[in-house]
Length: 412
Ligand SMILES: [Zn+2]
Image (tube, rainbow, N blue to C red; front, top):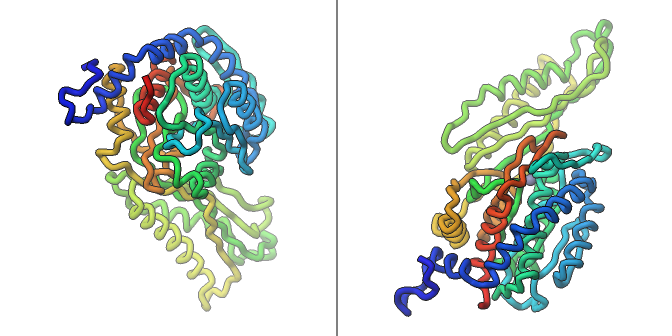
């Protein structure tokens, strides 16, 4: 299994043979040792990073923090694009085939959130400490291990700290990168690092669409204007009707009404009412059906109250506030074979998963992309009590390193 040469010259090595051969290299051994020994340094980086605010659409301070780190670690062509995405290359030669490694730098926490990180035993606490300070630190750990151990990847690697993954960021960082042919035509595959753990790999992109739906009317006094259309009532009726939509188990499809707003006081007929709705599905078709049902429910309620008999002056609006494409890797995709081979080699029992991550974008562009965790364990994501357990983090880091080197190839 650990043989470096294939059984026959004419037979290419299997992914598992390739991974085993890479893991045997002296430089890779020394990188593994480094990743194990530097754990305390990684914790320092992680707590420091988690205390740099990165609210959606306000990631500048974190971009700058990462730009400095990339530069200090000796990456080439380090730069920040107009959105705040940070890039750095392992080799100076930009003509080499390119593999990407990314970790999102944004958090869900709004500006002004108190960001305090602390350590208790092997556990780190703090908002964003796992999602995705752990991912960014894993990326930095890989860069420094490559440098320390003087590993020479055959292809080039671009490390990317991207903005806009969470919530209303709507994958804007990754979207911006792949909208640029300079990236979409050169990055062959992308390894996305997000959160903790080693037990899964995301090979299917969960599609989602988000809408803000609003009803508007003239509004008025609850007593003297009684009888004019009430946008809150209309909204409630439309949402109640929509929520009766039958949903298939397979492909898994869900919806949620997460925010509702409207009205000014108890004795006023409101002028507007709105709700935010999240639709998700593994299937583009089901997602489209669900969207149609939502639009139908809204417009039928509107039609009824504004019919000539009723004659109410009401309007509605359906605004898209999020759109993530559904996509799937081919079962024989090289990147899936690589991660399976790495997991077999490291004796990790992982399962494929369906999720909405930065990988949705390259997948929708027909690229190979996979999302994996950074090792350790984590919980309480998107809460102020978020935690990351550093125990065995190096297993996750070895996993990333081996997968990356199998994708790029490595000089002995
Ligand atoms: Zn995340």
